[in-house]
Length: 220
DNA sequence: GAGTTTGAAACT
DNA sequence: CAGTTTCAAACTC
Ligand SMILES: [Zn+2]
Ligand SMILES: [Zn+2]
Ligand SMILES: [Zn+2]
Ligand SMILES: [Zn+2]
Image (cartoon, rainbow, N blue to C red; front, top):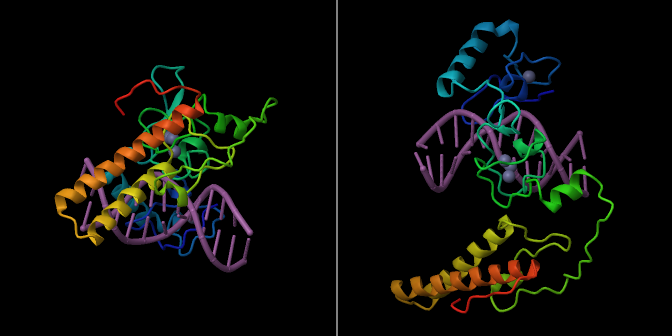
């Protein structure tokens, strides 16, 4: 049950689960809870304010994908960045559904073919994948000190949040360096762009490698 | 149970 | 529309 501390649904934060689902609070630990019959008017006003902001506020968030039997999907999609959509922080995952194209998540692992998702949900028999990855240092650039890839984790089809962060950190570092050396704005820009190029190419290299592909292009 | 992480929804 | 704030719930120890 909910344990919100707010006297009533207030601005700037989400509502307790009871209220969000349109129910009265029941057996909650809410502090000064107004989501009950005792505060009918206040409650109604809160609901009205909510609906005013978003008419769909109390609609179920899990709709059907299209017609009838299509796969259910989250009506708004999630916006996860750090959970890989494999924890209950993610509304898609919580609802036991795959993320869809309307999700704006980063580093999503909540898709049908996701090995991470599979190892999490079922207890696959033929698991393992010998991970001899411990040695993977991302060499030349500053990737080295930054969030490393976990042993059993590999990049799948999308770029993970860790990589996004690492890339940002590289660019920031490059910018600071340029600043320290009092480079012109133009040169700084160029340095950062070049760093970005190195990051991208490294990301691609690693991704290709993990898939056993070769880099065909020579123009990189 | 305390402390941390996360992301929806409100807000700017 | 993107960035920030808030805070209850999920998670971790
Ligand atoms: Zn309550
Ligand atoms: Zn998600
Ligand atoms: Zn999603
Ligand atoms: Zn996702």
